[in-house]
Image (cartoon, rainbow, N blue to C red):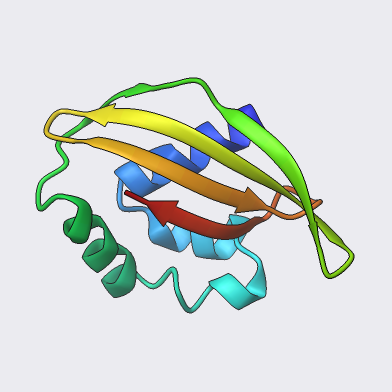
Length: 102
C-alpha cells in the first residue's frame, strides 16, 4: 500500500491524471479524475503547490463497506508552497477507489 500511495501522490503532483485514470482507478472513479476536475480540486487547496518536497508516514486501515474491503490511507505531504493531507482509498486489488485532498 505504501508504494502505491506514494506513486499516486507523485502522479497527482505531476498532474498526470491520465495515467491514474488509465492504470490505477476503478471504473466508478474515472469520471471524477478528469483533468479539469482534478486541477480545480488542487487549486481549491492552493493555487500553486510548487514541487513535491516530502511524503510523510503512510497510515492505513482496512474498512468493510457493503461486503467490500477497502484500505483507507492517510498521509501528509509537503510541497514548496503548501502542505497537503491526502486520504486515499484502495480496493482489495489496490485500485484507486477514492481520493480527498486538504
